[in-house]
Amino acid sequence: MVHSSQTLPPLDTLEAFASAARLGSFSAAAEESGITHGAVSRQISRLERWLGVRLFARQARGVSLTPEGMRFFARAQEALALLSDTDERWIPRRHKTTVRLSLTPSVASLWLFSRLPKLEGDDIHLELVLEHRLADFGEGTDLAIRCGKGPWAGVRAVPLWHEKSFPIAAPALAARIGADCSSQAFLTAPILHDSNIEGWRRWFAADGIEYLPRGQDRRFEDYNLVIDACVQGVGIALARPPLSDAALASGRLVQLSQRWLEYHVSFHLVRPDGALSGPSVELARRLLYEAGHDKASIAAFTAPSRARA
Image (cartoon, rainbow, N blue to C red; front, side, top):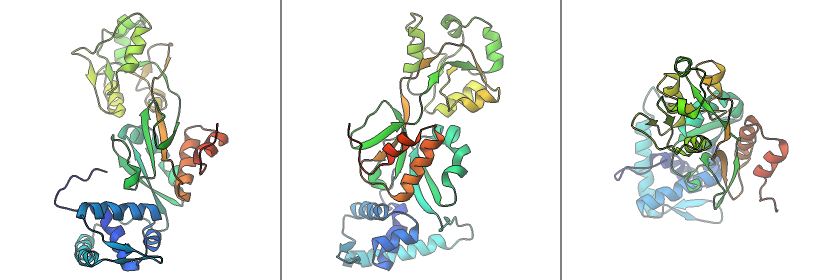
C-alpha cells in the first residue's frame, strides 16, 4: 500500500498502535486484531518513521508508551472514535486470522475471486492488496503474487502455473479472419497485449516476422483488460491459461491456432525469506493446491528454511 498523504499518518497503522498502547503488548495487540505479531511490529515501525519519534519503549515484558507516544495516543483515540461513530462500519470477522496478500488486479479478477471461499475457509480472512509495485513485506504483507522470470533476491518464489499461450479472439472477429491461421492473417486485426509485448514478438518471430506495435494495436496495463477488450471484439490477444480459461470455456473467446508457445514469464507465489506465520503457511498451501501443485512442491515452499540443493 502506498501512503501518499504528507499531512496524515498511515491510517492503517492507527488501530494496531492504539491496541498495543492500550494493552501494553504487541503480542496481545496482534491477538486482538487477528494479525501476526510481526505485522503489528511493522505497522508501529512505519508509524514511528512517519512521525519521526519513538512511540514505545521496548521492555523485557511488553512495551510502554514514551512521552511522545502518550501524547499521540490521546489524539489517536479521538481520531478512531470519530471514525467508528458511523452506522455503516465494516468490521472484520474477529474469529478469523487476517492474512495479507498482495497481487495484481488481473490475477484477482480472473483467478482468485472464484476461489476465495475455498482459500479463506472458516479460519482465514484474506485481505487483498491490489497493486503492481514490488511487494513490500516490511509493510505487513504476508504473501504476494507477481509476474516475472525470478528468482528474486531476499525472497522465496515458486511459479504458480506454466502458461501455454496461443492467439484468441471473439467469435465474430474469428469468423472475419476465416480459416487462415497464419501470422500474416492475424496482423490484419489489431493486436492486444499488456505492458509486456514479448509474447507477441516471440509468436511472430517463429514465422520470421519482426513484430513492432502499430497504431491500431492496443496496450493495457492489466491482463484482465486485455481479456475484456478481446471479448468485445477489439482485437486479437494471446491466451494466458488459466487466466483466460473462463472466457474460452464460456465461448466468449475462441482459439485461433493449434500452435502454442511457452509463455516467457510466469506468475509466482512470493514469500519473505524468513519464517511465516501459521495462517500464512496455510494460505500458501491452499493457493498452491488450487494452482495444481503437488504435496512435495507445497512442502518445499512452506518449509521454515530453504531446502539445500
